[in-house]
Image (cartoon, rainbow, N blue to C red; front, side):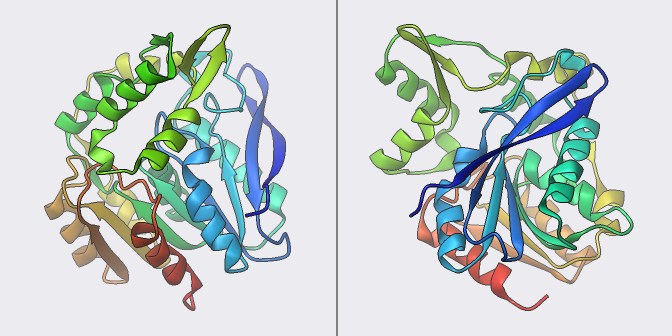
Length: 284
């Protein structure tokens, strides 16, 4: 696979401009697919899927949401939230200078895609939502907040890998190479030590409010484009009954349950990624 292009886009928050980093794969003239990662993850989660899509002739754009990966950190941590993320993604779509885009979003990235797709005049043509949905139970959010925003310091790669294998054990039975990719792309080096590749202050807005169930049914029912809904068979965030109700309320939704994992399917192997490639290639 050819090395992706590295790009930056200036976006605006209440406290000033910040650089949004994104990786581009495949031919620039092709219809773009934007792939957006989960809450504490980054663009490198989509290296495998982006390579497959590019091999099938698609342009693929994978941003680091602000505060993650190579994107800047916000000056005011209370700006970390969906209004800022939606604004940044709108700027990214404008940068691509296209009439429409396809969207693949894991967890937080899926929610950003849902919110964009629900808006009048949305440019999202086809939407893939990976293990998140119209209802998010409080218990799953509490589990995530149990580790999200932590700022551990690792003195060795082995310690970092052990941490990631525990935190992300719901990703399923990954190979040693897949774990290495996930861990290496999740770290930034500081001297002889490693830290997580995100701003730990991202969690502050979430911790500042009471944790409750999240009801997004009005957003879901405002979406008009075709949707592929992926669910990890053991997911505690996208419950089976929620996924089934989503397909009942929107019959133009295709549900695919992926065995052997919970929240969220990592899309790092052909079994999980190739159905996404095929679905996105279908006629809108």
